[in-house]
Length: 118
Image 1: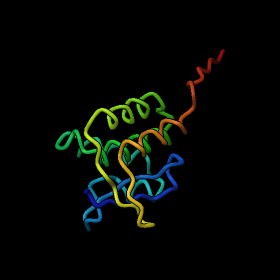
Image 2: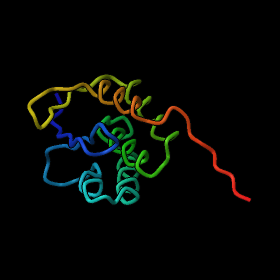
Image 3: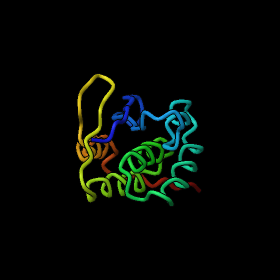
């Protein structure tokens, strides 16, 4: 089981982060509302660890906050395509990475509206 902490304020479902002292998952940037900074940090970390679900979940949450709904949706799908990882929640619950991704997908808009200007 991978020990992670999930905070329920981002993208309606939360963000995952290891309980390690050094933040490599964008947790602090997301908590501070710096979604663009979090995305940059997580994208760099994913070049090293492309299949870590906590990175994909946090990046999806950051993308959702940045309005990159299609990218967020794709990442949640990627989480569901890799083996499940059980994640420890701050309230003591254990939630699977697949369940967190499914909840994230449910909270994304059904479709992205295209806006045109004259």
